[in-house]
Length: 430
Image 1: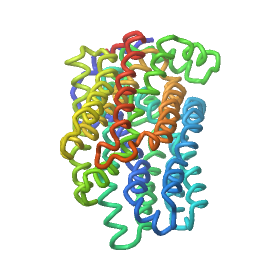
Image 2 (image 1 turned 180 degrees about the vertical axis):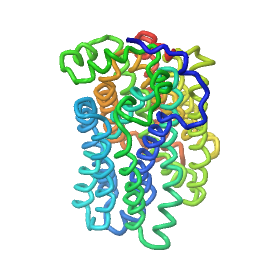
Image 3 (image 1 turned 120 degrees about the vertical axis):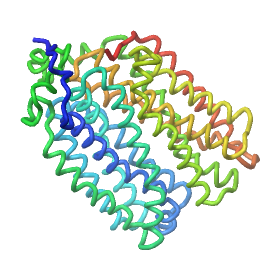
């Protein structure tokens, strides 16, 4: 039976339970992603203390991506099989322990082991959150809140730099990782409170339940909530699903190049001090973060509830930014605007829309599997991209121009992502 009760739009003074569940998702992501932000910000500290070579810094940092790639798919399937909440409890508990494990890392080998295990837990985060958002939010709210969720992950990088450096300077670099462990306690408590589906929480009143399931056949959803391999296979064999997985593998992948070479370009290329480089990156990272709060309005009002224009526009903005840097070699402020501001704009546009696209294309019960598979492709391509990017640095060239080929390749991949987006069929959020 489909829910179409008019009480769904009745005014209420209480905060809807779906927004509280979404706030838990945001807190969990902010907490777990802080580890990656602190790890990157404190690279000069731990690399010096552990006596690592330049090559070991790169391979040690990338180690988590290998396990992350493998467990993204596993985490997605598990979230569909046993429920997203259970997977997230394991993710948060595991990442909390692995963050604290930085206290006992003593060399290259233990760093690699720590990062591999961290990546294994980290892999369960993405798909589980996608599934919760798809089930708890009605279609018209998914693009808006998915983009806000992506902004929360970027916010982790904004606050981790000054916070991590402050801890490292006044205590030691290892103590900074305890921030993640401490924040994991409230995250775990709140995860114990929420449930996988709205009807499983007694605090969800009938009007809100009706609003969530409006124009959705809740009876069929509940009957189909058990994972079925044959049904999942049919979902994956749709051409639109396959094209959009290809798009996901490309659309935000060049942002890994920003993480690896962005600060390097500002410090080594433009010769900025670390403090000034930190301020510059923070300022321009705020642009995609702030935009994330307006993305739902853009999808609804500008694109008429259509997903494909939003999915394509973010990578196009990033591609134009990268190619402009390669072509014109601008001053550092414009350079940072185009790399950080335009490049990371692909995240709220694409990841803020793909959840709504998957939910409109197939059953919400397979959101975990689809999200895990597509994100694994993104991480896999990103790992290859970063691994080869060092060979694209122009030998004998000084300044930011030495990185020109990196931005050329990244810009081309950004733009290429728009092709499979438009080969897939359109999905509307309402």
